[in-house]
Image 1 (cartoon, helix red, strand yellow):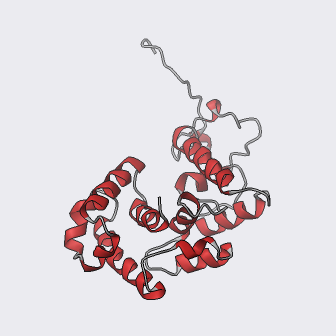
Image 2 (tube, helix red, strand yellow):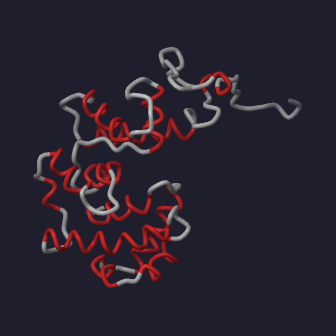
Image 3 (spheres, rainbow, N blue to C red):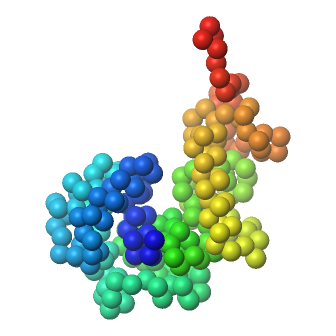
Length: 213
């Protein structure tokens, strides 16, 4: 998508399942075909459209403000200039916008037509990187982002970061889950230090259980 659309999608996706966020985004796009019209919308008009995303009320209040700020800063609702900015400056510019965190900023740069070489760290990527020892323990996603970017090969392009994000996310959703990670089914089980995984989470997991079990 274009970077403005991707930014809006990223903002409403926070702490929300993908299928719920995508459905909300599609409804929002249908209700506001021109994103600039969000500046005139009352939050009470936006919230029912994006519900049931997490914190729908807060996001409905932030979206018009976000669009207004971009227009005030740039004179138009366009983020294409970020394609040519140094990466750290592009990230800083986006994270200074209201309601935009490091995950949404990275997603805007990498997932959109900007195609910047940057890692998007969501909840699942953060968890997997922490358990593998690629980032420090704790809840600071920004530190995890910094650690992964520092370790990434210098010649990686946007596609490599995009692929790694989705591989780690899928792994975190299906195998390295928050509760009861399926360590016995993990292809990394011989090398993973399993940092932060408690013994009560490491019980034997079987892919299929017989009806008599």
